[in-house]
Amino acid sequence: MASLSRDDVAHVARLARLRLTDEQIDTFTSQLAAILDHAADVEALQLDDVPPTAHPFPLANVLRPDVPRDAGIRDEVLAQAPAAEDGMFRVPPVLGEAP
Amino acid sequence: MTGHPTAVEIAAAVRRGERSARSVVEEHLAAIEAREGEVHAFNLVTAEAALARADEIDAQVAAGQDPGPLAGVPVALKDNLCTRGVPTTCSSRILEGWEPPYDATVVERLTAAGAVSVGKTNLDEFAMGSSTENSAFGPTRNPRDLARVPGGSSGGSAAAVAAGFAPLALGSDTGGSIRQPAAFCGIVGAKPTYGAVSRYGLVAFASSLDQIGPFAATVADAALLLEVISGHDERDSTSLPEPPLALTDRLDQGVEGLRVGVVKELLDAEGMAPDVQARTRAAVAALEAAGAKVDEVSVPAVVYGLSAYYLIAPAEASSNLARYDGVRYGLRVDAPTTGEMMDATRTAGFGAEVKRRIMLGTYALSAGYYDAFYGKAQKVRSLIIRDFAAAYERFDVLLSPTAPSTAFPFGAKADPLSMYLNDVCTIPSNLAGHPAISVPYGAGDDGLPIGVQILAPALGEPTMFQVAAVLEASLAAEGGAS
Image (cartoon, rainbow over all chains, first blue to last red; front, side, top):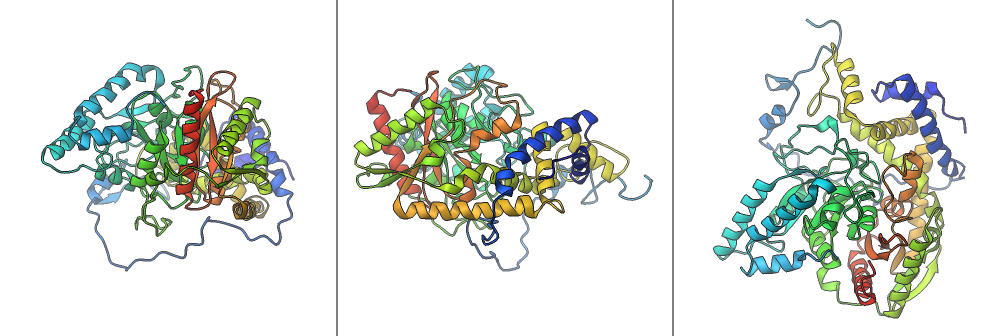
């Protein structure tokens, strides 16, 4: 197995939207490498004929009639938001400069 | 046993009008007042709400109504269970101040059964850990020895029961987070069959593994609590279409003729302490003496459980925890753009272990590594299910230690991998979706509690509790070595 590099860790941090200091990248690189080394036992298994399990029981899709239900808690939900306006969540600009 | 009145006794007395719910709650609030400072089981004690709720129950009894099977029984709730209008933090800065707009199904069912919530208990942040040291609000201490961890992630719930703060508590178990702290604190803790208890309102960690379950000082109390919270819920699409579990009528059935298999790979797992092995063998002998047919069994694939779990659970967590982005609830760290705001919020809001698992999961799912890690781990999950199925053709239940050692001192497992190795005996049941229970079975060389784990096939809880009751009785007969 290719060992985990600092660049891998920095790349994964970007994907996960986490900012790491250089020191944190060093620590995580060695810690995650140790965990992945332990997983080498699984990586080494020949399992071509084994089906994967994503869920312990073979439940089929669970459906209900498509009838709108109003939980009546919109205002409570919005009251928990860091910022809300006109019944919507408010966020900083997604593209470009702040107005 | 904690020497405090059990939930069964409290509910019976309150229902008959022999004791007021208020006096019960006052007694437990006094116990909290006396020792919570040193134990730190709770993130929040809801004393006023508990007393008000107790008065409601007393009014019901006075009006000739039955408040239900948990009438007046104080319950502590792990702080990853949603409680309407009551802060639910997951012991994370990222949810600080959030008050859920609804109750978890288990909380609704407790209320309908007459229980009284006394507060929200501490946990490893987002239930990621085996010691409660990963809480953003400081660790919980083991009431049996304050220099030791209570286990985790549901360490606060286990400590609350062990300290007599509440006869019952709820936890969640993704890889052992109920059973291991139960073992460390000398109480009973059970992980039900996946889907037997609704996950609606449980803050998600690894959705295909998470289950809510009971903590109690006695097997009968744990059975009563699990009966109340189990059963189908249409709001959880993974909820099994089953009626509530029937357990309390099975506790006096004994084990005559039951076939019990001792899982060789778990009894001899890497790092298993000799005193834990000795107590497990003592439990085997007790079951044999009670009439069970006991033999050793091999479940070969469980040796890969730990590696598979530490790929699957972080992978699911990395997806589930993507929702904490500063947009809809909890913490927001302001920044000029939404992308920067999300980065800054997640960086400030998550602790080191949560970041580590998000990173591990993101890596295991990333392009080029998916098949080697996540895909392989899912196949191992199939192997474990297959090997358990073979074992259950020969045995009714299986037996193993719950954890490789007694409770360890704070800071003893600072290296993440050594902490993960704690979960070797508990993880296989989560991967298979099967139930398992930890029952106290005496003490180790250091005088601290040891738990023995009984494993059962899907929906095998009635037999599992039947065996647990026999072990509990045999320990009492032995002189309560714990």
